[in-house]
Amino acid sequence: MSVTALDPNSALIVVDLQKGLISLPTVHPMEGVVKQAAALAEAFRDHGLPVVLVNVAGGAPGRTEQPRSRRDYPEGWTDLVPELNRQPHDHLVTKHTPGAFTNTDLEARLRSSAVTQVVIAGVATSNGVEVTARQAFELGFNVTLATDAMTDLHADLHAHSIARVFPRIGETGTTQDIIALLRRGA
Image (cartoon, rainbow, N blue to C red; front, side, top):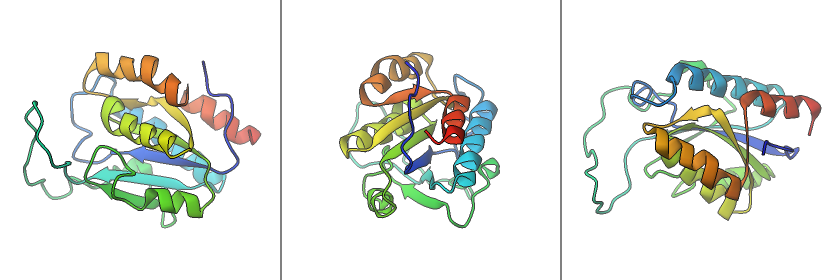
């Protein structure tokens, strides 16, 4: 199923498209993901809708079975990719967990702007994007996921999120599907 509608008060959330992550070996070329996310950001700005740019600057505490990197990040690691063309009215969220809502002002910022729907893009599909989408859904936002503006390190996890998880918490569509709905005012 494809995205059917966008609420008049929608916001775009772009997750973790930052210098420290774009060189990772992803399933889909990062250049295409960045290009699609940048097109979404520009379209949302053109329609006077909020753009939220999220970066990650650490990890959640806690013990896991898989080893996690606990290192100091190099200079510029959290810098957003320049293609996103960050504007002064964009909202920057720096997170320390997979989801963009945990311990940030994101929910309050969206509520103060009367946002009822979020469109989400970024990396990784099965982590930052999925967790942020689940949180948005649990908080009562309508959720749309731009499937060609996201990727993952693992093909099976990317496919699982898109085919099994996302249809249960929102709608999916391509960047062009979403931009077309913006243009129609739907």
